[in-house]
Amino acid sequence: MPRIIASPLLLVVHGRAGGLIPAELKDLARELETQRGAPVGLEALTAGEPPALPASSSATPLLLVPLFLLPGSHVRRDVPRIAARCRQCGPLRRLPFLGSWPAWQGALAAELAALKAPADAPAGDGPWLLHHPLEGPLGAAFLAHLEAVTGGRCRATPYSAPNPADAPLPLSGPALPLALAANRLTDALPSPLGLPLLQRPRFRAVLLEALRALP
Image 1 (cartoon, rainbow, N blue to C red):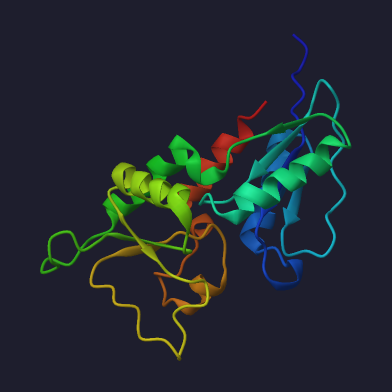
Image 2: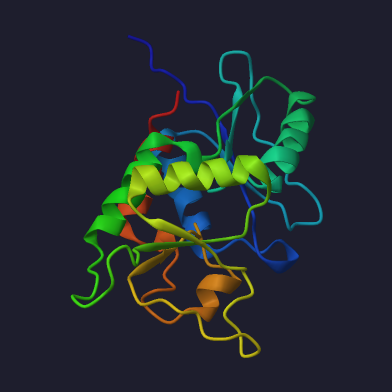
């Protein structure tokens, strides 16, 4: 039986200032390349110039994987723009954004269930999902869905918070930052609260398994 050739991947991430890509995302891409035997590219929205695209063909189209957790402007505007650019270079298949994947939402539910709330915490006080603010009906509907499927409570938390000019973040219950990789929010949060999701074994395993299984 001939060996099935895996398609190349382009992982689209937010990135940090100057196009810096956190180490946990680079490690993920390297491991995927080894396990899939196909190129894995990383594109950061904060980079000045897009990277060269992995070669694709009709048999192995480029798979565009938006590694975003919320349906914000990056998913609604930046990802379609990147997809249009990629289609000019060859066949493309675009996946939904990561935060919409049932397996990912299941991992969030499991992680929140594993967090222990203080015995004297008021009923309904967490566990919290700290997320970047979303606007509009689509954002509100997605956050309501996320609360329903994970058992968490969503709390808008700007990437720049907390900082010395702000009041302390009032969290009487357990919380999980909805950040795939290190960013300004996780930098500002105390350990272990500020641990990004890809630095937590459950989420790395779920994402690695899902991406490894792509055709």
